[in-house]
Amino acid sequence: MKNKIGFISIYSLCHFIVDFVCTILILGKLPYIANTNNEFITSVIVYNFFAFAIQVPLGYILDKFKIYKYVAIIGMCCIGLCYLINFNNSIIVAIIVGIGNALFHLEGGVNIYSLSARKAFLNGLFVAPGALGIFLGTVFHNKLIITCFPIILVFITILLLLLVQNREIEKDLKNNIINKFDNYNITLIIILIGISIIVRSVGGNSIIYNWKNSFALGLIYTTSIVIGKAFGGLIADKFGLLKVALISLACSAICLLLGYNIHIFSYIGILLFNIPMSITLTILENTLSKNIACAVGLNTMFLFIGYLICFIDITINNNLILVLSILLAMLSIYYAHKLYLKGGNNNEKK
Image 1 (cartoon, rainbow, N blue to C red):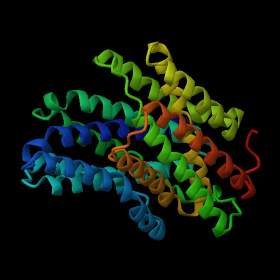
Image 2: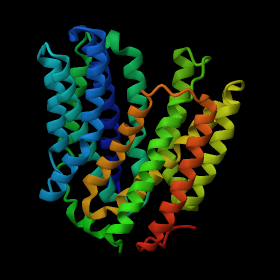
Image 3: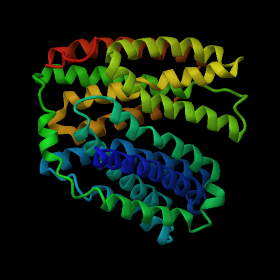
C-alpha cells in the first residue's frame, strides 16, 4: 500500500511540475524568439498540437511495442533541452517541448491506470495537479524564465521518475482487460465520449468572469478545478459513473451562471463542471484497455479539438454556449455509458 501511495504521489507531483515548467517555457521564452506575434500564436498552437493531439500516434506506438518505461524521462529530457539550449526558432521549441509533455502524460496515464483496478479515482488524482501547474506557470512565467528554478525542477522530476521505473505493470494491465466490446461499439463509445470532452472544453472556455482579476481569486478558482478533477472519480466510484456525471454537470450549469454575480457559486460550479473529467477518461480507458496509451492520447486529442474550436469567432451568447455544451455532454455521456455497460462493465455502482 505504501509503495502504491508513493507511486501515485510521484506521478501526480511530476504532473504538476511538467505542466508548470512547460507553461513557463512557452509563455516566457517563445515571445522573445518568435519574430512576430503571429509566429508566437502559431507556436502556441503547435505546442498544444504536439502536447495533446500527437499523443494518439505516440500512444499507438507505445501500445504496439509495449514500451511503458523511461518514456516520461525522455520527455523531461526534451523539455530540459529547450531550457539549456538557445534555439532561435520558436516552432522547433514548441515541437520539442510539446513532444516532451506528451511522452510524460502517456507514461503517467498508463502507469496510473495499471493501478486503478478500472476505477476512476486514481485517474483524477493524477490529472488534477496539472491545472494548478498551468495556472502558476501562467502567473509567474516572466519572473521564473530568467532563473534556474525551472531547470532544477526538471532535474528533480527526472530523479523522481527514476524511482518508479522498476515496477512491472504488464500484469496489472492484463488484469484490467475484461471488456467484451466489438469494434462497432468501441467506435461509438469513442465518438460519444469524444463529443462530451470536446463540448466541455468549449463550454469551459466560454466561462469568463471579469471579477476574477487577482492572483488570490484565480488561485481559489483553479483550486476548485483541481478538487473537482481529483475527487470526482472517488465520488463516481462510490455512487456510479453515470449518476455522478449527469448530476454534477446539471448542477454546474446553474452554479456557473449564478457565479457572474455571486462568486461562491462560480467556485462550486467549476468544481462540479470538472467532476466528469475522470469519469469520461475512465470509460475511454476501460473501453480501450487493450490499447491503453492510445486511450490516454485520445482523451487529450479531444481536448485539443475543443481548444481549436475556441478560435472560431462564434456570435452566440457565452451563457448559451455553456448551457448547450453541458446538455450535449450529458446526452453523449448517457448514451456512451449505455454502450459501456454492454461491454462487461456492469459491476459498477448504479
